[in-house]
Length: 306
Image (cartoon, rainbow, N blue to C red; front, side, top):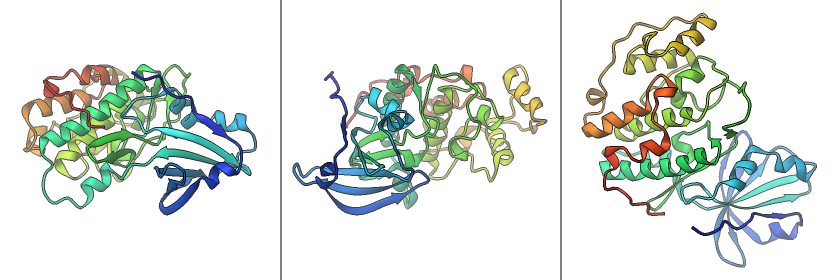
């Protein structure tokens, strides 16, 4: 493996002059993203401009997005090419990707072939295994944060990333509700990397169904929808979950599981088994990213067309 090149940190206004802005790609809570081209190399990039002003370089370097991406260099994690600070404005220059998984699913009329779902999941889990191994978890995995270019898939948007060894309590309000792990819904403050795996399970089901598996309208409804599919956990299955629930005065609804094979008839038996291992209520029983890559569903699968 090639040694990652250290990130360049630029201060001068000249560095922004190197780029010609082509079009706006999106506007989010933290900043706006444009597509641009490097005038010298003709390389297309995505530039994210943060809404917040940054008055010192130290302040910039403390950002989770920079902290995590400086340490992560893997083909399935979006590459941060440089960070530029001009007149207290902060810009992140990323490699350019064409679209995200949400766009890929949005107007689709026919099912994805299982081989394509396998390719998407394998690449996502390769990125995730690398991230978890290097001590970070993402906390906001959702179809919009998986970027696609051709057949290549890369994890993006590390604004909510945390270090695995950082001390709880963590905030309980993270990640888009439909992909949120049950322990976060029950306000756990010491959750960890398994929350990313639960999100992966929910996304994989959505790739088959072309609609969300747990489309909750609010936090309580989200737990109901999760139990309606997976069945309500028993106290023996998830003792910590019952402790969290009683702490917030919540009683699990009584649901028997709806077999995933019934909801997702186009998924193979091994794919169903794989999703169930990612969607375990108890985070300690959830498969890890490294274990997931060795699941029989991926037998003989090594393609990573990035």
